[in-house]
Length: 333
Image (cartoon, rainbow, N blue to C red; front, side):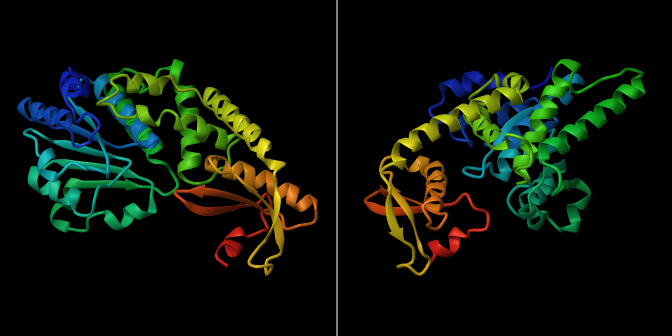
């Protein structure tokens, strides 16, 4: 049977360090995996949706083939140490949506003689990939700047599972037909955001909707993570996001009538409309953009200035609806 973190729920629930990522629950899971000589260790970037979905696909692959494994979240806030991961019997270690701190993978490969396979889509990952030739045969990193990690992992394990099924004369799929289209559509939106394309319809609303799931991406504290990820629907997330945007715009409109005129850079950059939004800094983007439209309509610069008090400091946020207007130049004046 697959070794899942779910088998260690009793440790997690009893531990006061449940929300630490290098927690007693995680370390006890690793100790038990070492005792049982579990050959496959799966680490995923937390709190990343691409990392969590990559963990789902890796979990499905190993479960389909009844291969023992252990899945744990890997956080840069309190990362595992190399010695934590040196478990007996380790053969394969997967880094999902991260490549680890510089030198981390190289040291782990040398100390355990395991095969390490990593997936990432960030340009910053390229500088962290080890160049040490002594262990290069044990390290494989897939860094594709045009494909998010979750998609790369999905394609990787789908292909491997198909090969296994082909050799056995069976058709085995990572996802059944009930979930395939649904999950693949979610992946498209995640990729659109991860790669900063922002090209899909309602991508902003999707981002707001899915962000509410971020607290559920720790498989130690949430044993239902895989089932929940499989149940996510793009349409539901977009509806949630649009509702949130509408509520924020409604709240923002209540402040728009209390505007005043501001001289930008002592008048060097012209004038625009401003408004005080003390207690509502989270509405600064919506208020600023709406105010910039009103500012332009009365013949001023198409800029909205949102002024608010934060920790006894007066702050100003400049926003515009006009793509040709550079607010950063004004802000640094």
